[in-house]
Length: 175
Image (tube, rainbow, N blue to C red):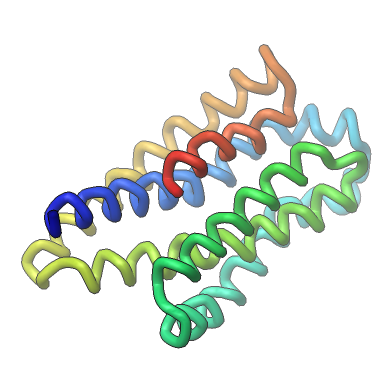
């Protein structure tokens, strides 16, 4: 039973780390279309900078809150925040809204990275952690390859909004 619980936790962590790692690369290929539709070229950089700013600034907060209230609960709240930010980003009507919604997505992404590593560290012994860190690095590598391709496919064949909506079913599975 304990082994099954660990496997589920690792699968969920890997999937959410994949989402957090992929979100920049999948969005990058859609941005020329997004700017064409929404305008706002003067704040274009904030679509990326805003999410990184809120992600990095909230990481210590998520860690401390999870110390106080428990990893699982806080991790799920962070994942839900990331998914709400993703869904709202897909509904943006102008570039200002997109930046604000991406910043919300970044708040949630801060928990995914921080608490993902923490959960792995708490569930596994030191020698097992090294192997799992290798898997996490592999997830980062795969996401950096899949993200631009997926962003281009979604933008060309469906809609640029789907570069944000694609997180929703994957995030639901991770939950």
